[in-house]
Each structure stands twice: as C-alpha cells, then as structure tokens.
Image 1 (cartoon, rainbow, N blue to C red):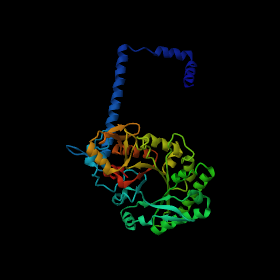
Image 2 (image 1 turned 90 degrees about the vertical axis):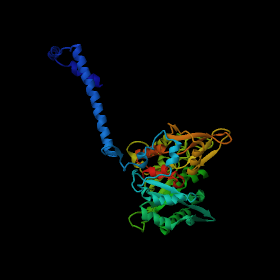
Image 3 (image 1 turned 180 degrees about the horizontal axis):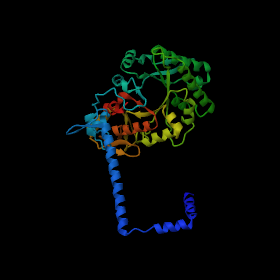
Image 4 (image 1 turned 45 degrees about the horizontal axis):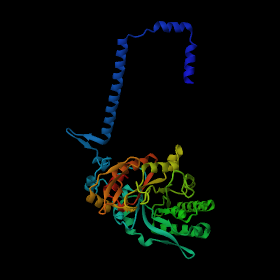
Length: 443
C-alpha cells in the first residue's frame, strides 16, 4: 500500500516539474560514484568503531577503575565474575580449588528480586549458612511441619524441629522473613469437604505462627492432592482453591506483634507441568490468577525434570522458560504475575547410570567433589538445557552421567528469573557447594 501511494503521488506531478527535474539531473561519472561509495563506506566503518569504543568505555567505567599500570576489577562486581569463573569451559580443577572460597562481601545484594531459601534438618549446615548470609536472603523456609489427621482431629507436628535461638540470630543479623514449610498431609476428602476441619487447620497454622513469632508459612499441598487424585474433579478442585484462599485471607488479617506493620504471609508450593500441554491435575494459569490476591508468592519447583528412568539434565533452561510462559503468559500482565513467582533452583545434582541398567539418583556437594577428585572428568556443556555434565565409568565399568549446577548454569537461571521479574527459591542451601551457592547467588 505504501508503495502504491508513493507512485501515485509521483505520477500526479506536473509535466513541467518533471522536465525541470530531468534537466537538473545529470548522471555522475564512474569516478565520482566510486568516490562517493568509498566515502560512505568509511563513514559507516567509523560509526561502528566509535560506537564500540563508547560502549567499551561505559562498560569499563561501570566495572573497572584504572591505575597507572594496571586495570583493577571493581569490587562491586560479584566475586565469581571478578575471578573469571562464570564460563562454559569450566574445569574440575576450578571446582575443587574454588569451592571453599567465598567473597568477603557477605551483605551486598546484587540480585534485587526476592530469594527464598529452604533449610532441612538433615543438612544442618544450612542453618549456619543462613545466619552468615541472612542479609542476602529475603525468605527463609526451614522444613519443619506436617499437618496430619489423628482420629477425628488434626495435629500440627514439627515444633520439636524449631530452634528459637536460631530464629533470634537470624533476626539480629538481617531482615529475612522466617516462613517454615508446612506439608498438608491430612486426608483431603475429609479436610476440604468439612468446614470444621478447614477452620481447625487454619487456626492451628495461625496459632503456631503467633506463638513462635513466625512471619508466615510456606504451604505444600498440591502434590499431595494430585497423589490422592482429587484434582480431576472440578468440585474438589474448587474446594481446594477455596481452602488456600481462606487460609491466605485469614493470615493476612493477622498483624505481626514484632513490628505491627506487616501481616502473616503465605507462600504456596506449585509443581511445573511435565508435558507441553496442561494436564487436568496440573497447577495452571487459571489457578495462579484465582489465588493471586490471597497468596504472597508461589514457590515453583522447576527441578527434578529427569529421573533414573529418564536420565538427563536436572532443570533444562528451555523447560523453565516454557513453564513460566505457560503460567504467566506474555504481555503486560505477565510481569505482574511473574513478580509473585519464586523460580526453583536446585543446589544438588544427579548421578545417573547410563549403561548396564537404570539407576542412580541425587548427589550433594561432598559426593560431587569426591567424584571430581577420583575421576578427573572433562566437563561438557549441553546447549539446549544450559547445564554442565560429565561422564565416568565406575569400578564395574558401568558408565555414569553426572549433572550438577555450575556457576554458568546458575547465572543463566538467575538471568531468566530476572527477565520475568521473578524471584528464586533454592532447594536447599545445606547441600550446596559453597561458592556455587552463596558467593554467587548475588542475592
């Protein structure tokens, strides 16, 4: 259409104007055309050179300062970037040599979005790391509680796990919120259908938060409801969503006595779809929108993508991206929804058997380091999943594939979360390589 309008305007010009233009136009000589072409080429080249130099100077001004004889890395840049450790061509030597090193700056946050870190009683190192790096974490979730049926009543188990001294230490060192995880193990057909039990469950949770001075809870129930097969029924699904809303609204009505300025918070654990299309039991975008106002955040378990029966990457980046797109969509609303997501990041790996039958499973830091020292492997980078892995043969000549987070894989997942406006949730901090976790998470 634009071309047709332009040609019609030209044809509508007067013949006298056309003759004047034809008289004024004189073809240039070949030498003149060549000279003009060379001049234009040099202008373009000069433009790109100047643009590159300006960009380089801006980058250097941001990250470096100069002395008379050397370039010194800006101390504000994350430690592992200063050391040049975030790269695809990592080696086992670097992991062994650097895993116990950590930046002296344990307070500055570089990743501005929320960071939720889980802590488990069976990896007690996490408690100490949480105290040391509490200023880098916004939400701490110790795995302490289960809500269960006992006869006709509900009982909240787990207070024996709670450590008031640790909680006090955390609050002295930073502003991280303490939100213990509560797993809802009560039989859903009883809990969701009976108003009295729903109210009892909510009262038990709120009373525990008040007495222990928690800032809220992280609730895990969807996976349990999937296991019971209740989410295929639309009525039961609606009751499930209504219970979460009721709990969130009740918690938001409670003002914390510690500061009187905030309410109890509810973070809800959700699993990612395992296929390209949503299944009936999957937590989907409609569920997210239904709970948006009642829930303060959604802990998205974007890990455990592979298993001994289907070995491969722990959390392929393209899978994480497609999961986020499926949940929050695209456009202006996606950012608003994305800001309530904690993208799950695993701080553990997997050692899978690749020959002689299926097998293997999760490994943590000391097991990973032992494999590196024993087998001295060559790291390989899997482009589609954005994960490092290596191969080795055990004493029985059985081949294994080991997938474990590296600085590069973590960097790419942090950037992905940032692009959606999302935070991150870490499972879990007690099992992690020191440098691959806290000195890098940039929280």
